[in-house]
Length: 419
Image (cartoon, helix red, strand yellow):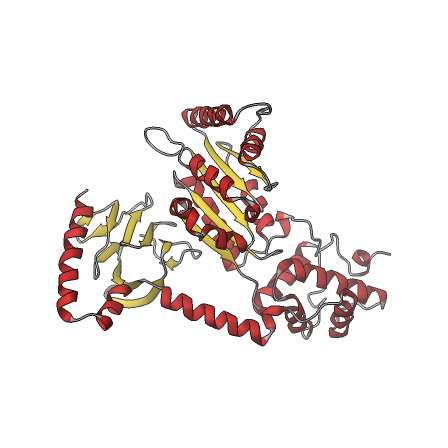
């Protein structure tokens, strides 16, 4: 008898191979998928998804790919320790070419012609690079150049880079500033918290055919989180080993002692995310992030303040879908209604082809550089923009300097919005 028969399961619940059928949609996984989906409806979609080893990036990519429409052509490159020429060859091979023994200029011409042909046929083309943390700066620069291929109307290649946290550090390096400016959205998959981890385990057991809702005793979950840190791959390894331990002792329920036995069998230590040092580092990083926030958005409905949001440099999405950074539950707001982009020069709001539009007063705007205090209407809701950098300036500068800066800002803002 196998442990599947012993526990009345029809499938192995904690296998390590990616399987979209077993995916658990935590809030952050749902948001990451929404960001990937945005590459389809944004003509210049370029998204970066990062996460620790075993956080579910590959499973997420497979789920995304399984739901693409027939009008989407895609290539997936997973072998990333390549030269620029080898990378181009890998991409073209995925698109069905035999690009070997070709010079680089010929490879670029082949790719350019292919993308233009697909665009003319009404097809959308997506390039997905997994394990992107291994890409060299030269290959990343090649990807930047590829992202710029366009017709007279729009860009023709959507790009998704997925990789481990080192990818974030690489992209933030000074030599890749131009590439980073092309990236529309970035998202980092964090570990599951205790509640999400329990839901994750119960979800996988249910998919595997579990009928006994208490296959894991209540006191197991804190111990599982203590040693797995909420990382899906580690959760799977620990739970699978614990099931084997319980099966060996002919138990019908996995108990806390079985988790302990599994930890000893695996020779694991407490996960670093649960140590005091790690928590202190996270607190320091969080304070640094708070200091780096430059944009504040106040959300009002019928004049009443509903929520306040602060953001660092980068892009955030506003819409009816719960996975958005600014979530507005309203029938007048589209699923992904608008994006707000904070940069070194201020903040820009852009309509994402919403049904009811974005308004500044009575004027509908497609793309608009916001001024401090501007009020933007989305249906019956109002967004008020505040540049947090101005409040920091007020603490440091004399009043005369502030007035001079304000005059200059007004002139610059007027010039941008007249374009």
